[in-house]
Image (cartoon, rainbow, N blue to C red):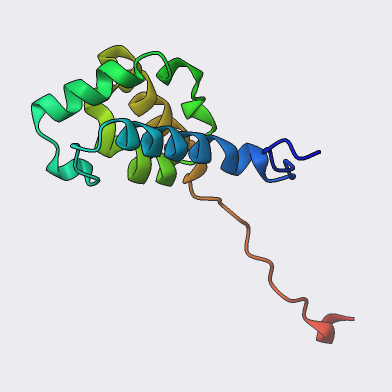
Length: 118
């Protein structure tokens, strides 16, 4: 019996949330075919339409599971549909996480031993 669900592999934590977000956005665009597919072309009314339809779905997306690049490419263009406090919290989260991950590592230089002293 086929369920329509595919097996979840070990990379699900890395990939599932972005897929959920992409499917929700595709569903939304199918529900409102008058909306442009490119969010940079959205009017204020287009964002309001999107926000009104997706407001119940947004709370189910675990945005903090996204990589910062995914947030930048996939969520940021739709920031106007997010509640302002959620958007600010997410922005802060991704900036702080990116900063922590990008701190330079200080390593000690290892010099080869001089074999002449033996």
